[in-house]
Image 1 (cartoon, rainbow, N blue to C red):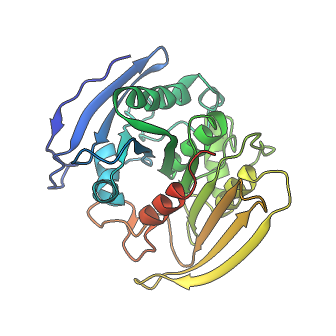
Image 2 (image 1 turned 135 degrees about the vertical axis):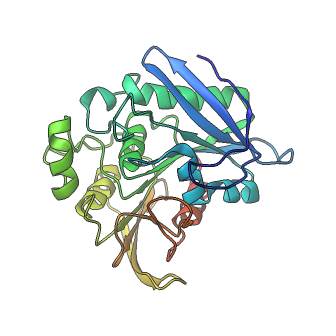
Length: 298
């Protein structure tokens, strides 16, 4: 396993943006290697820092995703590390994470082993709070984040899934597109050690059908009675949303589901300089971070 650092002051292709705190890194193990950007906030910090791993969607890159989600700015503001793994075209021609392949849905195999390995490597090289390590993603990255929450609940304290799918929704490339359009065609796997989960999905998403967001929430919920609370709201940019909270009475597990009315396949509240973003909001990045920081590992 190796990690190579250098200061990166180049932005995503076609974008002009300075990211002086972004380090360009690479992780290798027996399953392969992945480049990733690592944002390190300035200043010494106040004790061990949280770490958030962000997984881009199809046709995106680590830099593009960092710009579109505004996570670097929030990381600087709140003092946490952010890792942005980059899926190469050699692994998937569309740069999609291979969430639909059985071999890439298993602990210590394939892409999950790479993502968990680079997470652990960062934790070993920086002063990271192991109780505050999180993972989130968009589209195929959201589906991959769901896989990581299912296979590594001992590593990630909570997960954020934006416009993604539940772990195990498909077991082959043949089933990937039908699942995206209609929801899981296979029996749903249930999390044995569910982690707190926050899900965002537009109800006009024609790339990944909204039912997939419902299934991601259902997969993560524990087998116990839950307190359900629903509120309606509207972002400052005019997007109406329905927000549902599921909470165990003992407070040991919780989830939030945001249904974004009229929204398509885009990161809510993202920066327009990044791809697949909807600046009208709500601010999914800030809301995910709020949820994460309220749910350290207990």
